[in-house]
Amino acid sequence: MKVVITGANGMLGKDLQRVFAGNELVALKRDDLDITSLNDSVGIMKRLQPDIVIHLAAYTDVDGSELDPEKAYAVNGLGTRNIAMSCEEVKCPIMYISSDYVFDGARNEPYNEWDATNPVNKYGLSKLMGENFVSTLTNRFYIVRTSWLYGSNGNNFVDTMKKLFTERDEIDVVDDQRGCPTFTYDLALALKELAGRGYGTYHITNSSVCSWYEFAVEIASLSGTRTKIRTTTSDQFNRPAKRPAFSVLGNTMLKLEGISELRHWKDALKEYMKEQGRV
Image 1 (tube, rainbow, N blue to C red):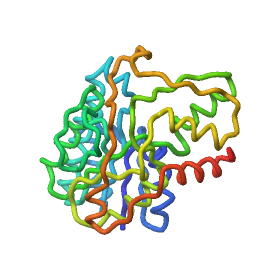
Image 2: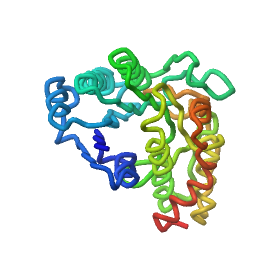
Image 3: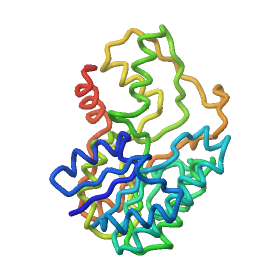
Image 4: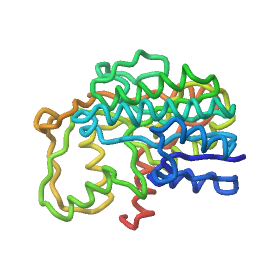
């Protein structure tokens, strides 16, 4: 199987290259493909003739998207449109990685794949734009929503906390946002298993739920730090973009498709920190 990955240089991209080793793999980085150009996108896909495209390339700065929404719309919206059109041109499936931020977080139970979307920030809206383009421009698609990603080769909450533990005696972490921390290696394994299964929209995260504060406490416990972690609320941080308070994803379609749920987020976190030499 010939697998093309866009945005291949990030956390998930690197792990996908690990799990798809043995396949014919084309890892496209930013310099290799300008997804905002339809001509470039179509030309490259026609040349490569992939069996599946896993589309990761995105503008992921949530606050930056609020300050410059047109950039987010251009990359996450029109860029995804271009990849979807390119895939339709060569008759291959697209697997588009989307976000829990397409939901508003106003409920207190996990969101299923068919629940109504209602993003509360421009980043979430740009990812929803991408979803809508994918689902209308081709019928060979996987839309995969995930959340709170961490892994090697990229900025993430785990590494940020570890750095802060070495710099401060006390840190404040919000306790009024709840979600599902997801290890990119576990996600990559699930994406590989999903490829070739039934098309549609899927939620894929590690199991169970926590707040950012609870996540930080677990990181601290595994790190053995003496830094004190205090709870705070989102309104104490003057950030441009609003975050959904409860963006927990129910992995219902994954289970219906017969794919095992990912392990508990605490178990995944422990493995990641061991790999990084931090436990």
